[in-house]
Amino acid sequence: MYSIYGCWTKMLLRPLKFQQCSLTSAVRMIKTERVGDKMNVGLIKLDRPKALNALCTQLMQELSDALVEFDNDTEIGAVVITVGADIKELCAVHHKAISSENALQNWTQISKMKKPIIAAVNGHALGGGCELAMMCDIIYAGEEAKFGQPEVIIGTIPGKTLETVASGAGGTQRWLRVTGKSLAMEVCLTGIPITAQKAKECGLVSKIFPVNQVVLEAIKTAEKISEHSPLIVSFVKDAINCSYETFLQEGLRYENRLFRATFATKDQKEGIKAFLEKRKPQWTSS
Image (cartoon, one colour):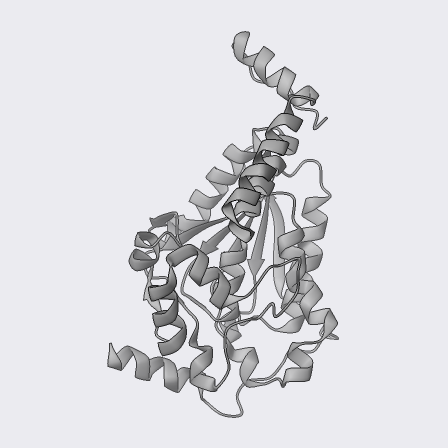
């Protein structure tokens, strides 16, 4: 374990090699495409291979823009994001830059998404990369993936999203809610990452796949989600997130309100009718 810690320390503290990417760069840092048999899944690939997909400001701005575009696309039912990044940007920027309004808005957009987001994690999801994965609705991981919050090693704490209300909290809060106090403390206080297997055991990850199958499996799940009513899917996502981000009783009340609201929708009536008629429903999101 100590050797792993030493490895991360060396990687995170290498001086003068980390630079914040310029917003004026003409090179796009993400790739987007429609995928799936019905082309109803939005795929977003981080494309900074030389920087191990470190989450710089430009990349997050492009990610935010892509999410808005997919959220407004009526043909897209769910989104898959490839994740595998470290905290290099924190080594290059100061507090004023990291807490700027624009930087926060880019992260906030992830939590504003009405459509489900699946994180397909390969490699190292550390710091902001780990928080990005945790802000998604489902996490699938490759067998060699690692998750962690090494910020303590460079003299800061997890909290990439800082105090933005819309996106909840950063690493400390999400680790606590998902894994419990003990593991959250261990990960955030030592800076030592956990394996994909450990992440699955503690509920951080839903499923683990061979490295070359992670994205494909995430797309399959996104396709399955896309078969359902977009309106009802958004209700389910809201209900679960309400409980996740608030107290249980408030979450239960919110879930009950949404449940009753579904019976005022055409999609609910169509769902029942299609089930009884043994056919696929025709959703209208109304």
